Length: 218
Image 1 (spheres, helix red, strand yellow):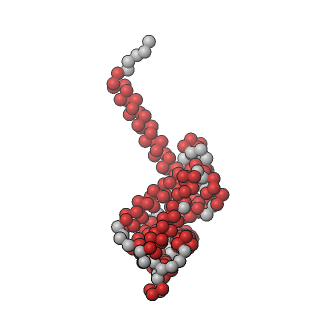
Image 2: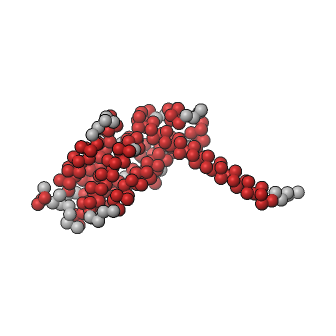
Image 3: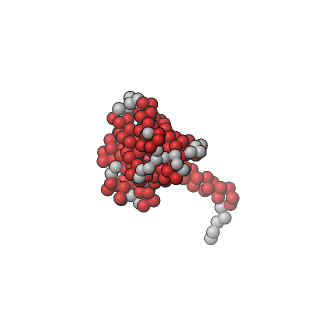
């Protein structure tokens, strides 16, 4: 015989499910944050589940395995988290610009600002992106995120050329060079946390502006 538990019991069940969902989401975020810090400190190869669990204060690596199918699954979530936080910093600054030159400079400045306040995030992202075998293994949607900056920057450079703000160069090649310069700053800051980021930001701006300038302004 089916027993009607009533609205009050149904409400309690919903509240219990909501609490469980919140707890699981909080645990996943805790694990992802610990993974970001561990990858930044030890590199991708050194970021074992045991190291991540230790940093997260978890009693067992089984708690990580409960939420993530494996290291690749966790790494994909790490990239999603970093990209979301990075976008929160960069997009408003870029969106406020009205010229290609202003957008390019805002992008460069926002990268340095993000690095200053979220060092481990950019260090981890660059560490993950430089592992070719890892990038090939990650699901296509997540793999695409590692190239989002490159595609967006190439498009911006092309738009700047069409508007006459930038000179003649291969946008695809220069986009790679610009992000390589950005990544070099990340690597330097990873090795030397006392790095003068203001000086690096100025030099990065000047180098990129000279590289993109037309012949008359070089």
